[in-house]
Image (cartoon, rainbow, N blue to C red):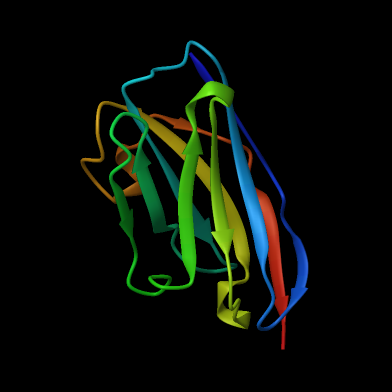
Length: 124
């Protein structure tokens, strides 16, 4: 079992920045992928970004490419999502997720472990 805890959400003005953290505990997989997803009210949960903990390969949704950066600190079992140039349409609950191995899918239903989510609100 893997436990994931997100932190770092909050309220920020458009154009501002936030850094989200996803801390993993329990039976962690050093050879696994960590992803960030988000869900706005009334919308489907959507993929944002992911990283392979071994190797560091990354993947981004087109909507955040160039604005968001995912990184990891394997010694701390923590993955970060640096979000810059935030827009009101980035407002959502952000979740981190984990799956053994490498990034195989951006479909949220196929990821195995989930955190409780953290709210990000971007005001215009």
